[in-house]
Amino acid sequence: MTTTEFKRPKLTLPDGASKLLLHTCCAPCSSEVIEALLASGIDFTIFFYNPNIHPQQEYLIRKEENKRFAEQHGVPFIDADYDVDNWFARVKGMEWEPERGARCTVCFDMRLERTALYAAGHGFGAICSSLGISRWKNFEQVCDCGQRAAARHPGMFYWTHNWRKQGGSARTVEICKREQFYQQEYCGCAYSLRDANAYRKSQGKALIKPGKFISVI
Image (cartoon, rainbow, N blue to C red; front, side, top):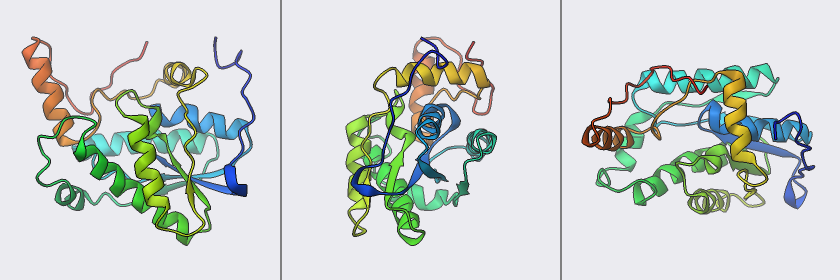
């Protein structure tokens, strides 16, 4: 089923919220989320805060792809800081944690705490993240971090809608093909790149080169 054939259900923000601040990590992960929100007429703004992405060249490519897609649809895009030194300080001592482990929890906490802080200061009653749709991520882990971040601010909530359901993941792939997005081959941080390349080397495969365009066709 293609996106043109799919009849989207009408989504509404819970608890009477009128505006959503959507944390995004890249264009591929956020594409289906953005199109679903637009189809439901939800008032939302994108918040791009991802100091974990390494190296900076990779960060800039992911950000610009995400920004391009947002502008294409007329969605406001907040470009937050790339405070990478702060990120490395937050995860110090967790360099060898596995993917989806404690390091990822600290990483999600940092990014969603900043999202919630911006939301609280700019009239957003709800926050959410595109992180949960990614095959690299643990959906429940992302939601736990989001709810913890939102709980710091009275009256705010983290929207736990599962974007993977009803073919969401498949539509993400379809949109990526249609838009010819830059396709990253690792989660984003220096440690995920290290581990992905260690596995590739053990399998005799070519190493990942950040910033190299990978076609999704």
